[in-house]
Image 1 (tube, one colour):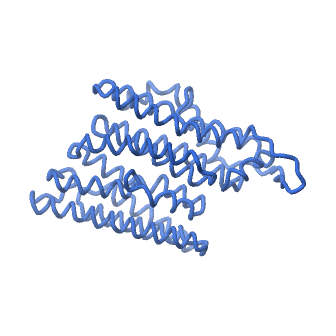
Image 2 (tube, rainbow, N blue to C red; image 1 turned 120 degrees about the vertical axis):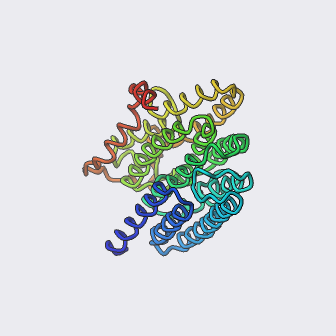
Image 3 (cartoon, helix red, strand yellow; image 1 turned 60 degrees about the vertical axis):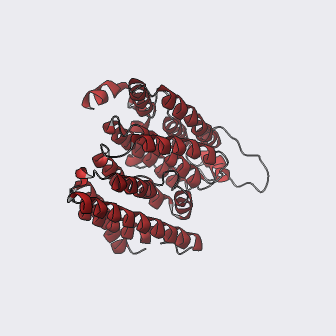
Length: 346
């Protein structure tokens, strides 16, 4: 792709995200979402592979439907209450439609079918954008309207997302699909706490973004798309493989790594709200995710490939890893000791 064109698309992506997260009026928020969708489409389909074109088409149709539902819910609310302000979403039907629209935008259960397919058809760098920055505007809208949304509906969708993200990730051999189901599972954790402590939702999202950034950049550096390639990648960059192991375990939420912090705070808050059964359920479903993270970590660092003549080993790379990978990997694994400071800010 032409570098100037790529720069325009990235700039448009940032513009759309900033427009949505800073707007108070529904039309401005909707316009930001549309700019986002249109600027990511060329980045998904830039390889001109049939799978990439299919992914871009699926993404466009899903996001267009979700944007239409956002517009419809805001218009219904304005019709009944005369308010276009995002925080004044009070009409029950509008809130229900908005919940469905944002779940579709994010790829939450039961509107999750498009996300693994789109991520599988996209390059790793575009997959990183889809998993992180593209989820920020919808999560911001959820944050701004959390007082109006139905807590029971959000809890049910969250439990289903955590369960389905765990179950469907078990059988995958494509790394991008595993990360897509991991994203769906994490969305469950973000949504379940939204009605009770929305700041924890944002904290979870920020830390998830940090860990996903580290994983995607590492996979992009060692050029891995499948588990079978991941098995031989340790010869190429042993230090990166070791950091990938720790970051995957952090994403799984194991102490004493960074990923344990949001899960710990969310379980604590759910228990305070007399929702111990829900906390237990979502914790058990996250064990399914732990299995496929361990599988990825095992393939990346512990498995030795069979020494047969048709098995290609990768050359050891002496090129130093980028500073961004180093910073994100350290932050993805070592932020737990400063959790009292983070709790104080919240």
